[in-house]
Length: 223
Image 1 (cartoon, helix red, strand yellow):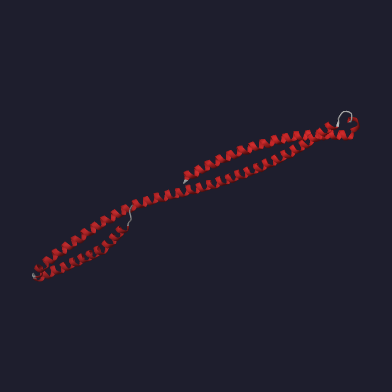
Image 2 (cartoon, rainbow, N blue to C red):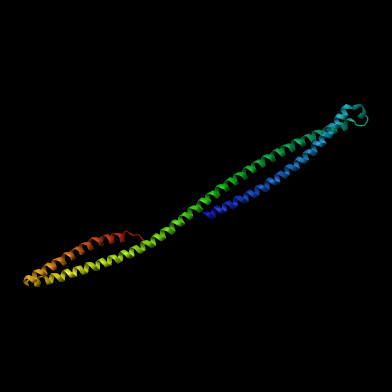
């Protein structure tokens, strides 16, 4: 996405350079036409002055300028006037083209600014996602360690339960011979009852803790 936006920005900048070159050429044409128009105006003014001079002093020029020359001057005046109008129209059209090109250039600059903001926003989003990914990777490693610890705890609880079960089985087998020993048998029976109670307590605790550790271990999601 960032590469595509960079390409679009490069194309937009190239288009702006082309527009600026075109505007510069158009402005040069306007200057040239303005200079030519000034020349035409000067020539027109000269013709007008000549005509005014003829009108003001027709008597003095009557012997020097005939009707054909006067008509020629009038024709030249009209031609210069038409040329001046044509140049004015060309200048007006060129100014319109320049205004259009400037508007297009400004639009491209605004688009580049917007694209730059979009690229910056994308870069910030990518940085946030990378930071989140690093955090999740760190949490994942911690969960792996926790799971290994829970597995070890489960193994220890299983071993404890097996030892307790073996101890109870062994004590069950020795209970009857001890009961046949009279008072000493009663003492042994009391001791056996205490040991059996402790074994039951340990076994109950192990049975209670084992499902909890297994549940915690299974709830850990690793990649």
